[in-house]
Structure formats: structure tokens, C-alpha cells
Amino acid sequence: QVQLVESGGGLVQPGGSLSLSCVASGSIFSIYTMGWYRQDPGKQRELVAHISRGGTTNYSGAVQGRFTVSRDNAKNTVYLQMNSLKPEDTAVYSCYALIRSSASVAANDYWGQGTQVTVSS
Image (cartoon, rainbow, N blue to C red; front, side):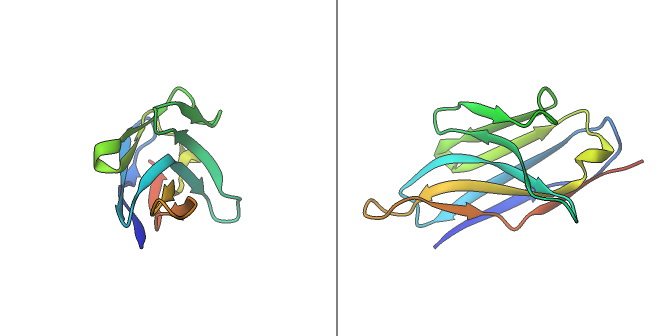
């Protein structure tokens, strides 16, 4: 069984910064893409950022230039540094990973439980 556990998040004022981290644990053979999505109540879940195993990144236009995604492959961890936060960044942020649990099975999508980020004065 594979688990993704997030930490970080909370309440921050507009213009402030927050960082999130997500650790993958359990039966892991290989981790491919990792990243972050977010969802506000009443809205669809949207991509925030992805990072490949080799470090290639992809950001949504809404966060480009303000957020930075990174990963530590040795620690099975993905990070999200969020700067210049805006009220519209308020959402539940969930980490994502494409993980192969053994050499004999295909990779599957895994999700964390989500962590609330609130940007408000």
C-alpha cells in the first residue's frame, strides 16, 4: 500500500509565503511524476505544478513565477514553495504522485488527503 502524507499549509496574509511538503511511503518501486493540485469548494480541481523524476517542471499560468515545485527523490518527497500569495490561491491543496509499487505492475495515481491553504487579511 502506498500513502502520500502532506504537511504545511494554514493561514497567511496576502503577499505572504507558505511551504507544503508531501512524503510518499509504503510499497514503492519507482516514483515518476509528482505534483500538486488544488480545489476550491464549488470549483473543479486544477493543476498547480508538476515535476518529473528528472526535475522538469510544469506550472499553471495562475501560479507561474510565484510558486516553485521541487522534489527530493532520495526522500520520496515533493515540495511546493508558495510566494506572493493572493486570496484567490485559497484552496485545499493535494499532492499527487504516479507510482509503480513493484516491477510487475503498472504505475498508478496516488493522492494525498489535502491540506487547507487560506490567504486572507
